[in-house]
Image (cartoon, rainbow, N blue to C red):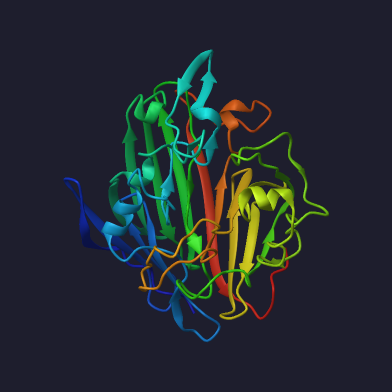
Length: 366
């Protein structure tokens, strides 16, 4: 039976950030995928999907009010980037410096000696222009942000467009486009934390995970890539076959010690857009992810703390959610051997990541 077209997203007032009104947009249909997105930080605030018995539940971490997001973005906060669009540069840039066309650029250091996720006032802290739409390919929200030349130290005036779309198959598609008027570096992603058993239900260590990657990037003590990517075979980083997230967290592997768990870049295998699958045995929910990006940062929620109260009013402890961040590799501007993140005038930065929520009776097959 053909489903009715998805309705245009609804909009409601969500609060004020400085002098700007912030709104929440609801995409999807009753009984299917329902996604709520803020024009503050492009945040996915909640995402509801049915479990094996058809009962809907919110499967992403978030704050119940705008105040939670604003407070978490203060310089003295242990920022966790719940659900946000990350830019201009996702992940870390070593020492907060990079050289482009012979010119040294300095960007703010906000993670030890490194710059993380675009700096202290990255795209996750901005109010974006937003427009809802509905067409034959689904219903969505188009977010636009203009970042001026020199913003957080980055060269060039960058115009970025991020589109969230729920398609007729109840998949969430995130597409990114950006253009610049001067050479710059760009690496965008979304920082949603997933808990397929339900937000605030406990840790995700019993979730099974499969990642389509034969190599990963070992990290130094600052979580920058150290040396070349290495095979996952024979290490706790081998998720080519589905494995519970917590099965090897306690192993004395030096890389797990450095990251206090998983917080590393996997080099996705060529030849398929398939990136990862995750399955929760309690709810039966199965998450499948595809991307056009070359890397996947898997983060097991190692630095979440109990002073964060989520949308359901319950605290988020360590491991309360996991992130699968489709992106280029960390510190790429300083690593010419990595896929380039340079964007020049006349070029268009493009990427797409797709998430599908279904149910299954057993662990995923990669």
